[in-house]
Image (cartoon, rainbow, N blue to C red):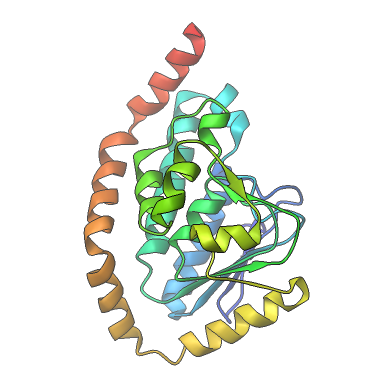
Length: 238
């Protein structure tokens, strides 16, 4: 497991690339490895980050300059991770303290309990503002967590929100004081650890089964090696 994402036996997964916690293929691979271990340990996960940002989202340099294979592999790893969190057999708590751009926002929306620290930062899906079409899997993740009044504002017009309004939008469940974020996340995880995990997993699968099946099909259909080839071709002709 890479230092980009460290896992502790208490269930904490911490992202730290020393910069903006960009969701490169290396970061995504490290996160998958961390969730592998958490699943083996049957741990309640707390997903958080170090530095000023929760996540800067996908590595835009890969979209702008990367090979077809790099683009395909990065988007595939991200989509699979979001789906994994959405269907994870034990509870996942997201603790956000800074900017959360797409992929970071997808992971937060896929988590079971989502905490935001007070602060001057933004969360959202800014793809259409930077020339990217929102992937279908991401739209469905957003649809199942965001409130209807905010869904189009987030997905279609790329509006970003501070922590308080992000609760209203549906990104977070509540805002806590910045210096209480870790403690609050641990308290939530402690309460969730008292659940019957078999019942939790079965109920999550029942409650989210339709959207999980839908997203699974979208990933398999949309994110193929051809996706990367098409992006490189379109980039060359632009």
